[in-house]
Image (cartoon, rainbow, N blue to C red; front, side, top):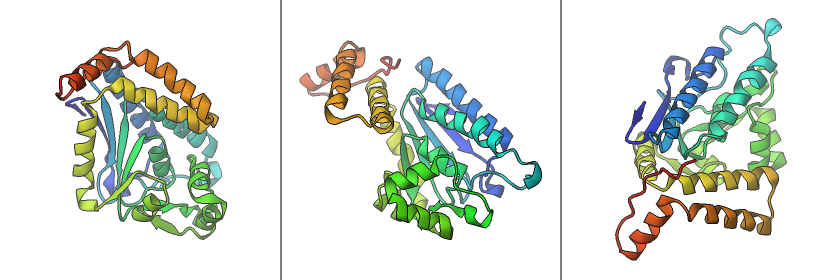
Length: 259
């Protein structure tokens, strides 16, 4: 749904903890395509992803999967990976509110989101030891990056889970909140961001991705910042921000600098 410049994408299968089969992944990709098209028209300036019920997403829906005929490569490489790349490239700030189980593909959805707020009792880890499978959807990279090799392999080998509060304390996500106020608090923050200078936010989003993926050094990152600032100073929102500061009033950004 789209309202007040915010696209809200909902995983809505609480009876199965919002686990995702092939069609659900296609539907989710289509939802992001629709929201991106609306963003290109200036109708969406932020996106919120959430899950109904007691879990954000428990991962892949394997209820009907026959191991002998399972094509894990097609599911992961053909559907999950392209979806996560599409989510990460969304042309506006993206947020997720995550409660309960956030496992497998569910973890991947969070890794592809700009800002993640989690319930204090959310659960993260690698439950795959009991399936004879391994962590997927970028989990190995992310856990190693944030937790280090030993803690990552500890979680993989034991299938133990860590809480949302612990995950935030270890730098995995942005903020942990009480479960009963998570969605309301997240919506309030997203509403504020949706009124901001979207073009400047997207510039920072892309620069942070470059620093992460290309391991930019300080001076190279600074050069990229300088170039982005030079581009932004020609936009309407940049001019409005400076005028508002000089006139001692709140800025009224349009977001039309979004490219």
